[in-house]
Length: 189
Image (cartoon, rainbow, N blue to C red; front, side, top):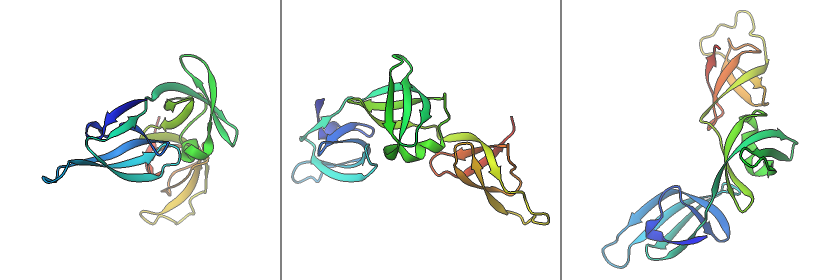
């Protein structure tokens, strides 16, 4: 834990506000000419994803937290927690699924991810921007259904439901945007 002047806070800084860990998503420095300069911050709560807007005078002290970036292997999920193993210490630990619900659709057992950890707590699971997944369930295209732009839903190996073009078949690999969960393209290995 260290103190940082509000005026020195940058985007991506980790802070403790109201005893909750936050990351700075946006920062705006305002110098009104009269009175003292201040900083407008848009913070994301790393426990529940809630957004908090705060304003601090640039001379105010804020509490910066030191986080660790830990390479960790995803072992499995038991429905309540993700189980990871620290790649350097081989320590195993659990991360509550409730705080990182969508991650389950983009992680395959055995893959390695960077986790942001603080005080034994995992605040963030760094997912790639895109993920290639195998389609495990796909409805057959109906004969004569050749409408341009026709789509259907498929289910991937991670249980992610994705809207795809009609030509995607079971067993094929598709690329999905992790941010939106939307289909990007078919991958031909």
